[in-house]
Amino acid sequence: MLANYRRLFAVPHVLSLLAWSLIARFYMPGQMIAVTFLVEGWTGSYALAGLVAGAFPLGAALVGPLRGRMADRGGTDRLVLTCAVVFSVGMLGLVLLPESLWWLSLPLALGTGLFGTPANQIVRSLWPRMTRGPERQAIYAAEATTQELLFVFSPILTAAVVAFAGARWAMVLLAVLALLGAAGFALALRRAGVAGPAPDDGDAEEVEQGPRRTLLRHPALVLLFLMCLLMISGVMGVDLVLVAWANELNAPQYVMVLASVWALGSLVGGAVAGGLRGRPRLVLRCFGSALGVAVLVPFVPPVTHLPTPLLVTPLLFLSGMALAPTLAAVMSRLGDLAPTRRRAEAFGWMATAMGVGGAVASPLSGGLIDLMGIAGGVLGAAVLILVAALLSPFVPVPRPEAAPEGETAEPAGDGPAVAQGALGPAPR
Image (cartoon, rainbow, N blue to C red; front, top):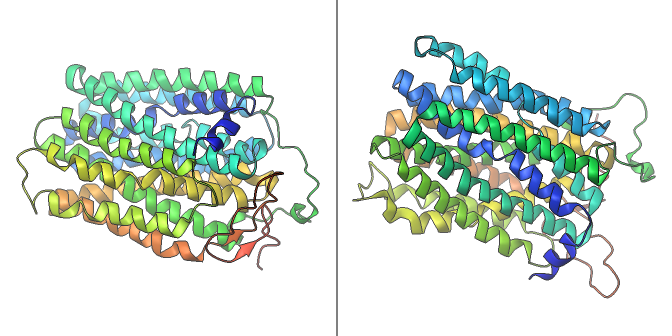
């Protein structure tokens, strides 16, 4: 199982790019917690708090493809730094906002979200450029897995600061970490020599004649974008449920435990998946994620009132085990199907889909919690992930790459095969 990882981290600069991209994204999981506590304290409403929290990913969603096209042209180090500076200033502006003007937090959050650090879409577009075959499958699994470390430590740190110093200081901390992480990632891009555009690999099938067509005209990519939207809506819905559950018990420290156990399960599942041979089975992983969230419904209030939320942690761990493998399979499939010289744009559209999913999840889950309690929020999240799973059988599978000498070729997996990295002309 470790062979894939050993080969992967022998590739120059992969480890530094992965590490700094994760540091640049460290603020993301904790941001929703800090914003939710801040705005709920102002308004007393989870729906309004979810609306403000959702404005951040919505802002990022609006500019995802644009920033992807900018990254495809080069200068990714400057792009990352510029976004990080403006984003940090916006976060500090929200901290200084008077409680009586809480309604200004919505446009401020949306504007700040426009400059969220694009480290995720940039680094994901680099992996097909730097790796191939089993190493490529392993790096997407490694990224999805190590990203779960963010969902372990970022909520712990954020909730701890909220509990002991207040939500405003948690926002300040996240703003500083976002700026420092982006600076390190920009430097790593320069050292690796990948801040410029992707080299022309001479694939004639990918040369577009005439005006560049939108990637939304490729059905396979649209399916993946829609699946990302639904899955992230469900995942962020569960995150908001955990925050609301802890807040109702007047015990914010429970967020640290519950969110961390869920993320730890995802980390373990992703680590195992990254060491497996062959192409990931997208359909199986998607349905596993939906089942993992659905089994939580009977064990949360008002269906069941447990003496302590800690009793649900074993189920949370098992539920999380399918998350990182599923996200890794989706990202890997997108990296295979997207045109080589438009991969950053494709991952920009994925970032947009995820941002829209986050923007939908926050007010939707907040409304369900206000109306139906914690169980309503979990049920809504399970339904969203299930719909994504129902779409997964229709995503085509690229043809397997030629195996390195001494190894057998990867099985094609589920679904119809298409040429790797070239979807052909878009339908008219």
